[in-house]
Length: 466
Image (cartoon, rainbow, N blue to C red; front, side):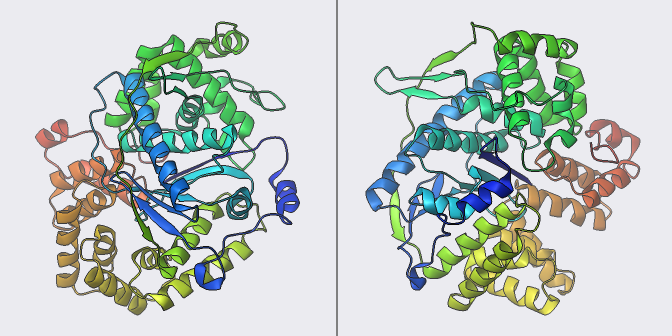
């Protein structure tokens, strides 16, 4: 679905990788001589770390505080009360290595990462919060996670730009306030763009070295939040309800033709606008437990999987081999380890018999794991009765999750309930699904519903991605 990273500008990733080889070290599992990993759990977070217990608990309290602060500010930007409350469907997985050496071994050239993979738990891999750069990266990645809960289909330019803006947060515990919008240092080489329109072009974000583009997006969003708040609120509202993000830009930003001029003036303005708001920190009641070796290995495999998409060409084979090895060892230690099983099932090359056996084991050992039920329901090699039972269990456990909504749309289409298929598919699309099969289903459903239902339901997405 989505992934992002907060990283370093100026040096190529290959040079950084070579420079870091000598000092970076991917963490080792406890049964291979590594440190003991613990899990610190709250209602909102599940932190996996090899930090000392006291430091890990303090980290969770920091996470809770910043999540609350970010939620308040995002709600304000969107127009207070318009986003509504979001019940946390599950804790956000946060992986916190104990030192910079381990962090660089995980992802040397990224200070932090957020990823929300299909049928995998959302995960933040954070940096070293011992300095301001690490805390800034943490706020950046948490901003992606908070925004993703409220507005899943945010285009890259606004998603990264808002995270750049929100990473500027500064808490004043004594005054009970948080300040947003402090000026940040411009990367070497300037903005690296010919115009603001280039920011909206996905091609500007291709490759790995896009720090100047990311900074430019942050500056643009900073300017829009400060000078055009009603247009930003309009834009976020449209993104939540309109299947075509392009229409949201045209519908809300009447000032778009002036962006280049405004941004140039804003970039060098001495009245760079900041906002200070009253704030009460979030509360937490952390529970600490020791992670099993299998759970640690599965978490390591998930880390490698999330980084692979940003790996330099030619440097990914060692990471893929380590991921496969850790995944295999996790399942040898515990065949029912849920994260390891889901990671295995994410591989389209798994043999049908193996897939069926894994989904059967996962759903028996973890009957409340809706992801495992979805995977089982998607297995075309299973008897129809088994797939139907799996679908009904997934629907009962997580009716509003995007993966379940998408599955329900295809079930409705198979039963020729085209109005239901269109409504469920549109909900899935707005919640973040964007694959070609769902797009084709929506286009097909559009012409199979009655004229009255066609007028009543939302318009499907365009037949080709933007």
